[in-house]
Amino acid sequence: MCNLEKRGNLFILTLTGSDEHRLNPTLLDAIQSALHRVRSESSASSALITTAHGKFFSNGYDLDWAKSGGQDTKPRLQLMSSKLRSLVKDLISLPLPTIAAVTGHASAGGMILAVSHDYVVMRRDRGFLYMSELDIGLPIPAWFTAVIGAKIGSPAARRSVLLRSAKLAADAAAKWGIVESAHDGAEETVRAAVRLGEELVGRKWDGHVYGQIRMEMFSDLLRALDFDETVGDSKLLNNVASRL
Ligand SMILES: CCCCCCCCCCCCC/C=C/C(=O)SCCNC(=O)CCNC(=O)[C@H](O)C(C)(C)COP(=O)(O)OP(=O)(O)OC[C@H]1O[C@@H](n2cnc3c(N)ncnc32)[C@H](O)[C@@H]1OP(=O)(O)O
Image 1 (tube, protein in one colour):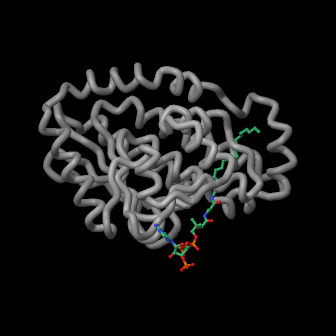
Image 2: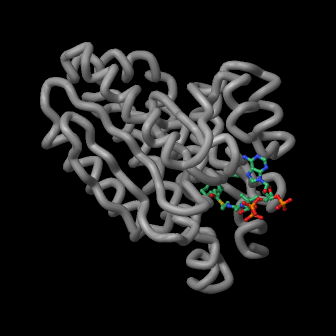
């Protein structure tokens, strides 16, 4: 699950437990209600750090949960996708800087969650940023590519991530500009996130101005996030989801 603690002006959202932090509706709802708490409790200058316990930041959608609903996994895949989409919209509109302290693997939906923060600081000795969909034969929602397009500037990096399912460790991801900084060990990664958060809070920006500027920066992405993929004719997904 997850917990939210306030440390001075910093909100620290932690995905707790030693599991893979798979993004099923229960965890997605818990994260979203934590973000709603951050929004309501944030003062003039605050920042959010999202991190996780154990070997995984998040290993993506909960495919076991999707399969447990019967042969056609599409409705459950789409439910997780629409919940994550709503969470990403929240992250883009929050009136405060956001930092993902990636202390373990962030795969597919888990990578989308990480890079949807303003900054990613990452552990270098363990953990990949990894869009695994090609490797596991799943199509990706249009809005996933919109997030990757908005957050990863280099065409070569986007090709590696999406069309080679590259497993990027922190130093490689930092070279591509996906990660702000790489650190040795989980504790040092979180400390780096706290340092960065305190530096940003120290600027005493008006959070609503910060949020408005970020929403302007990502206006195209926000439009893509408003498109309801369940409406689209996802034939490709139909036969894939039943083979999952
Ligand atoms: C067409 C229309 C569509 C319409 C849309 C409708 C909506 C529906 C959408 C459908 C869904 C699409 C989107 C999908 C989203 C999802 O999230 S699906 C779920 C995706 N999740 C996955 O696929 C899981 C992927 N994860 C993995 O494959 C593995 O867990 C892992 C991340 C690769 C980790 O593997 P594991 O073996 O557990 O890892 P480790 O043991 O930790 O490490 C493996 C070796 O690598 C070494 N290593 C680890 N980190 C590092 C490092 N930073 N640097 C160097 N080396 C590292 C580690 O030491 C290990 O090495 P060895 O010990 O030598 O093996």
